[in-house]
Amino acid sequence: MGAVTSSCPVSVARESKAAPVTVYSLVENHSLVKWDTLANFDAPNPGDEEDMKVSEENKKYPVPGFIKALDGKKVAAIGFMVPSETDEDEKDEKAISFFLTRTQGSCCFGLVPRINEFIFVQMQKGKKAEIVMDTPITVFGTLSVGTADLSDTGRSLYRMVAEKTAAPKEPNW
Image 1 (cartoon, rainbow, N blue to C red):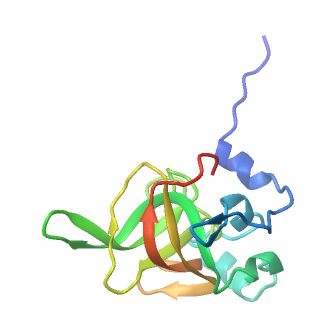
Image 2 (cartoon, one colour):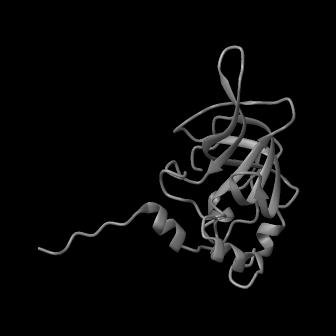
Image 3 (cartoon, rainbow, N blue to C red):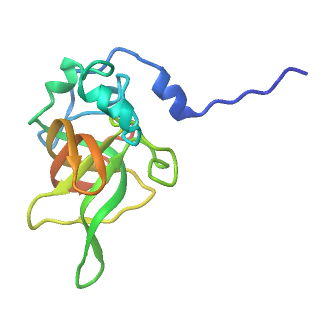
């Protein structure tokens, strides 16, 4: 009997490098940008200080032009919410900021995402998002691209000021 092998779908996704999609469908006047595009290039683990330093010097992980072109654009992205800052509403807790991750298990207790596999989302001033765990959501807002330090949560490549969140508008995200 032959050996049984298995592979992690996230590892396979990281290894496959199909041509990135750079023409986006519109969802509520926002370009729907998928993780196959956002994570379509090698990137460091934000917890690896040496790797991040090399990355910031653009010696090892340059950010491709098709990604830089998304800076300042209105986009919709689908992923999983990992709340960062919350505020208790009269009825229940709401998210003021959160990480939108490519996979459900991406957090400090699961698979640590690469810097191009999450978006740090800050809701627009005065807006809050319903906390939705273990179910994909769509986030609508303006994307910023470029490595930046987050006050106490590390570094990010992608940040978004979000107008709203909703259930995914596209079943094949």
